[in-house]
Structure formats: C-alpha cells, structure tokens
Length: 333
Ligand SMILES: *Cc1c(COP(=O)(O)O)cnc(C)c1O
Ligand code: SF4
Image (cartoon, rainbow, N blue to C red; front, top):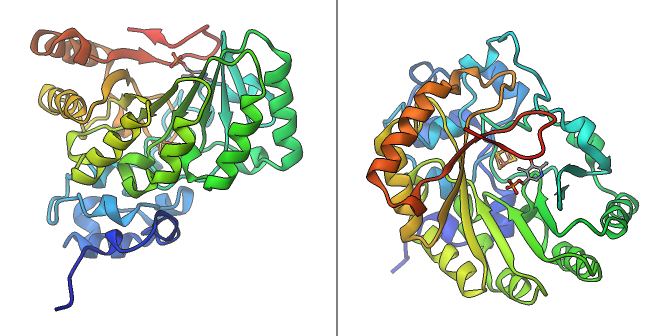
C-alpha cells in the first residue's frame, strides 16, 4: 500500500529549504482562498517576495482569510501605504555596523548577521529593507568580523542572527563555531532563529551534536507569535534542542490582527511552556515602512500585558519592549 505522508516529512531539511512556497496564488489555492478576499497585492510581493516552508503552510487553516499564520506571510495591499515617520532603517542599524555584518549596539553583546537568507519572509520584519546584498559575507569579511570580536575583550556573547543562522549549512556552522571557540572571552552563544518553528526538520542530529559540543551554554531564541505555529514536529524539535543542553526562549512581535488580544497571547505563553520554551520579549513593532497596518498602540499593549500578568504566572509573562535608536538596550515599557 502506498503511504500518503505529507510531502514535507519525506525530504531532508535541505530539500525543504530549496522547495519553499514562493507563489502566492499557489498558497491561496492550497487554502481555498481568493486573492481578493485576503487583500493580496502583487506590488507588495515585488517589494518583498513570498517565502514560506510547506511544513508551515500545513498549519494554516484552509478557508480562513484571517488565519494568523497566513497573515504573517501574505504580501498585502496594506503594505503599500506610505506612513509618515516610518523609515527603511528605523533602528539606525547602519550606524551600529562596526565591521561587515556585525552590529555592536549593546554592552557585552554583538549581533552577527550570518546570512541574508531566511526560510520564511515575515511581512512585519524590521529587516525587510535591510541591505543584505551589502552585508553578504565573504570569507575575508568573516575574518574581519571575527577579528573585531577577538579584539574586544568586553564581548561575552555572540548573537547569531540574519536572516536566519540556521539557514546556514552544517559545515558552515562547524567552521563558524570552530572560529568562535578560539575566542577566550566568550561566555555564551545565542541564536535568533525561526527555523525550528517553520521548518522543524532543521533540528537534526547533526545540529544537536554541534550545539552540545559548544564550550559555552547556548541559547536559542525562537520567534513564535501565535500558539498555532506549534505542532508535534515543533514540540519534537524543541525537545531535541533541550536535550542538547540549549536554553529555549521566545520573542514575539505584537501584531494587530494576529495576536493583539489577551486570548492568543495567553495561549501562546501556555503553548510555549508546554514545548519547554519561556517567553522572553514581546516587541512593539518597529516603525518600518510597509508595516504600519500591524501597529498596536502602547496603551493597548500595556493593557494586554496587565491582563497577562493577572492571568499567568510571572515566568510566563514576556517583557514588553521597544527598540529605540541610540539606547543602551531595549526599552522596557
Ligand atoms: C536585541 C539586540 C541584542 C540583544 O539584546 P538582549 O536584550 O540581550 O536580548 C543585541 N544586539 C542588538 C543589535 C540587538 O538588536
Ligand atoms: S525570519 Fe526573522 S529575519 Fe527573516 S523575515 Fe522573518 S523576522 Fe525577518
């Protein structure tokens, strides 16, 4: 008897990463939706292409034009609005770039843009206008970035970001970990990634071995915005990471129409905990051109947080933060 398994369970993570869904009309067909009923925009697609793993599409609800997973990836008409005060680089990351692909804004921590690739394109992304092409890392650039970390003894933590650092191949990660291992003042390694959520097969035995073998504790910060982003495969990926000694945290973005109610935020914290992940940050969206329709006011955010504090144990309440250019850390609200 031929087995009918969902396609994504049949192929390796590399194959899945090479087979992302990029055609919005195909996505909408999979979900039995019409372009007009979801506010799809081809112009928005050209500004920031669609990319979404099929394993993530499988968690969307067919027929639901307001599906919280769909809304995170669908190129929408609302993105074309030009909003005064909204910038291409609101965090002034360009000025914090101290070496190719390195942002050094906060004490003791540097953020390393490891790759421009992401497995998923999130419409609210504050890096949607990031000049990735200018930050493409050649070996020589890598050396320059690593020398910067080597020279500054106050850097205790390297944060691998992107793009998505887990979009890098295992051998590239090996090379990077080996280089970082030689820097004596490092104490922690952090990865900001969405891959364990959107393409859970990325968490394979090789990755777990690589993380287990690190000389310092590793922290993986996921970015789930909704409880429905979790399924059994994601639970299993999280369990494997924890078995490899990784501390799992989550940062979310407060997004209008996706999670800006007490119910989904409460459910998200509870779902995170059951996967062994603690909530870390809840970000107010950055004022990035093309994302104003996701905005939630500070007053509303604070009201939601008060509700979470009343409903949940303190360790399941994320810190409400906003990033502001030129501040020594994220601003607690
Ligand atoms: C968010 C961020 C960090 C890490 O901040 P934490 O508060 O330690 O999570 C570091 N560098 C940059 C540039 C950041 O944006
Ligand atoms: S995975 Fe992260 S960096 Fe990539 S588009 Fe989504 S939010 Fe942006």
